[in-house]
Image (spheres, one colour):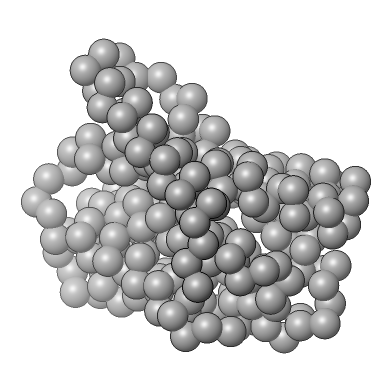
Length: 238
């Protein structure tokens, strides 16, 4: 297990969450543009790297794992209200600490980390997966911070909740490292993560927007995300 993986997987969501706590506006335009970028990167890495590897390792059983992940995310969305892909309905979070949102997002993050700890895939593919998870978790933590701030204003305890959330993916990695030697289990877990990725990325990319100007910016963000993913796939960093 690489220390830098653990650091990055904590750093991305923690920075996203802190930024969400510090900004003075609840406008989500920038969040949605970053989500468009991360969604394009996410689906590109999933299709180009992760799906072929999972099918190569476990055959047609991969489809069952992917479907399980896809429908798991649908269930989690029921509790998170879709904030991880930019749906911020503040009126739904005024009744106290959003336990269901926090727990569902944390479970989502923990599952994403599980498959990384066991070294089931090549380092190049796992590097891409680390950045895909990090780029996705940054806006998710940002959105969580906005929700926490809408409930608790500027309470210092919000930073603790963000730190706990940021630790979920690294914690999943640590737990997943205990499964070294159980490659089929680890590959199945990554299949579940693929299903989660597919649900989130397609929800982000196919979401309609009323503003044509925003639509152009979103298209640019998507193209950049696709380009970065193609570079990551074809030019490995060791």
